[in-house]
Amino acid sequence: MKKIVLTAIFAAATAASLSAASIAACASCHGANFDKPALGKSEIVKGWDEAKIIASLNGYKAGTLNNHGMGAVMKGQVVKLSDADIADIAKQIAAIK
Image (cartoon, rainbow, N blue to C red; front, side, top):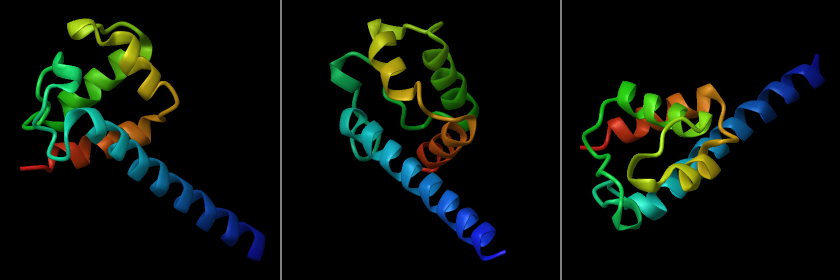
């Protein structure tokens, strides 16, 4: 029983740290308030709703989206993210006012 509880705690902590790290990685290009065009090329994502962010991240992850020539860069950023990670990141970014 202790092993199951510890495993669940570790999994939750890992997921939380992944999302925190991922949002920090996003902010390194998009700005702390997500109000900069990443690498001077992308759209400003501040103000986007969760659905638009999720759709964009999933498109980059699948390799089907290449807005402003950023497809390869963004795919490298999101390829390892789970659907839950993407949803969490979208929620955090959409909440920035």
